[in-house]
Image (cartoon, rainbow, N blue to C red):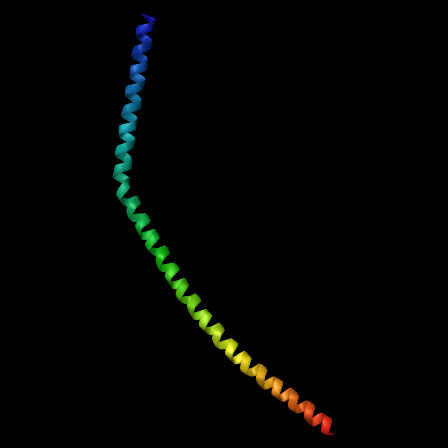
Length: 92
């Protein structure tokens, strides 16, 4: 009789596990839509943020390029002024 009782207990445990598995599946299905929407909104926000960051980086690259051009012009001007001052000092 103890063997029969053990078999019944195992079957009951299997039935409980199956019932809890089905219950958890139903829970996941009911919450699946909001989770999907959350991640869709989350990733949309991430893509917009990345796009804005890329635009900002492009703007900063252009700004750095403009500053490099101005710096080159200023370096040439300083070089000319230094050469001119050295020429004036040698005449005195």
